[in-house]
Image (cartoon, rainbow, N blue to C red; front, side):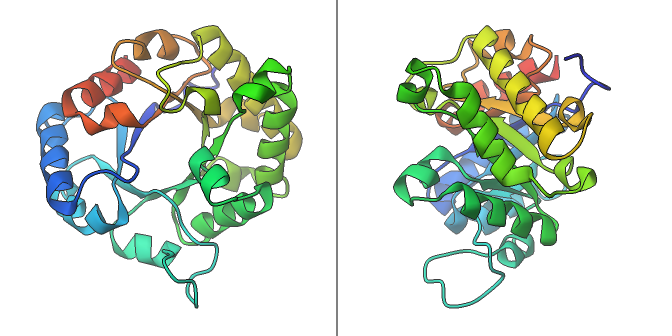
Amino acid sequence: MAPWPRRPRLVAGNWKMNRTAEEAVALARQIVEAVRGAPPCEVVLCPPYTALESVRAVVRGTPLRLGGQNLHPEPRGPHTGEISGPMLVALGCQFAIVGHSERRRDMHEDDALVARKLRAALRHGLAPIVCVGETVEEREQGHTPEVLARQVAAAYTGLASEDALATVLAYEPVWAIGTGRVATPEQAEEAHRLVRDTLDRAVGAGVGARATVLYGGSVTAENAASLFAKDEVDGALVGGASLEAEGFVRIAAAAGR
């Protein structure tokens, strides 16, 4: 599936449960200085909630964007420990990660909840970065196509095409997250085609070719260029490598090329 047209390139750094507010400020400053005011592609930083306000002050006035790592489907209410879309917006966020495999695994989030969170993000003007991906057992048993089809269809069925195109998808094979293993460029390309084909069926013909689909899972400055060389890969959702400014900026530079 050829790009139609060339989709924007995006690299998002998911800092997960790392960095205090003070440490996050130092890292954000290093990234701002490294891109020198002209990032090679769209760059999104997703620090912990406790650091959002501090990082916002660092990236204000720069092209770098801010994102949350999760959001609750409701805008307010008795949900101890949660964060809502309006809260993220008030903190300057423009993106929110939805359905990360660690949330699916550790917090038992199912496809239905991910779909609700996707819609909540859109309602509040946030671009959801919607994560999908198979476990190592599912891949070894040949179930990758059905897993991806199920997750994408559950999240996107019923959305208007303009709403679907206001989202970002991230294919993250669970077996590659934080393990040092990485999908080959060919495996990533095949999975991204499956995601795009499912979007066409769930939302409408042509949506898949226009959607931004990232790869995530042990992306590094060393392997990024080979992944981004595939037309189906529009950038990356970066975990551990986003905690080191120089390497993260090199990944963004590879995406920009």
